Amino acid sequence: MALALYPHATNSTRNRQALTPARAVIIHGYKRGWCNLMRLNKLKEEKPKRKKPATPAWLHAFTRQCEKDGLPHVAALVLFMAQTGARVSEAVRLEWPQVDLVNRTALLLRTKTGTNSTRHLTDELVARLHALKSTCSGR
Image 1: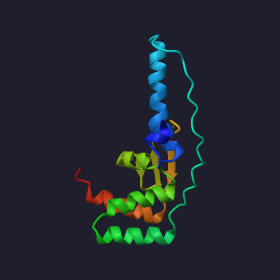
Image 2 (image 1 turned 90 degrees about the vertical axis):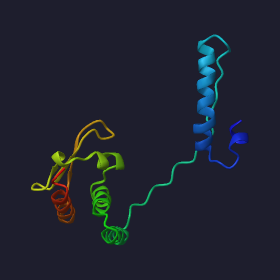
Image 3 (image 1 turned 60 degrees about the horizontal axis):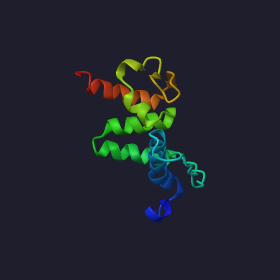
Image 4 (image 1 turned 45 degrees about the horizontal axis):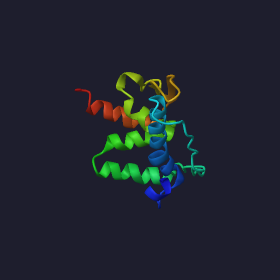
């Protein structure tokens, strides 16, 4: 079924979009007494390729383009994630009360592991965040 529905997809997509919903329907039917329990084996998935971090040259070019486009907040966000290892969800949840520019730290709340995590900020990032904070101090 998964191969017929998604002939050009990867096995992980077939598992996620075909087999998992079918398994849920079968289990629901079994719990209601409509059918016998059947097992569906997942298709073998390849290991995901390791992602390469952005190079310093790319980060520099990106931040310069953000400055030209008037998007200093995007440059600061990308630099924050690149320099602290923060996930996108962690970085966008960061608020000013969790940022300590004097001690050069940021406290990430509710990380993926369920704990808070302190991250240390570079001089460049502190300067960018200081400039951003002064422009949005009216909020």
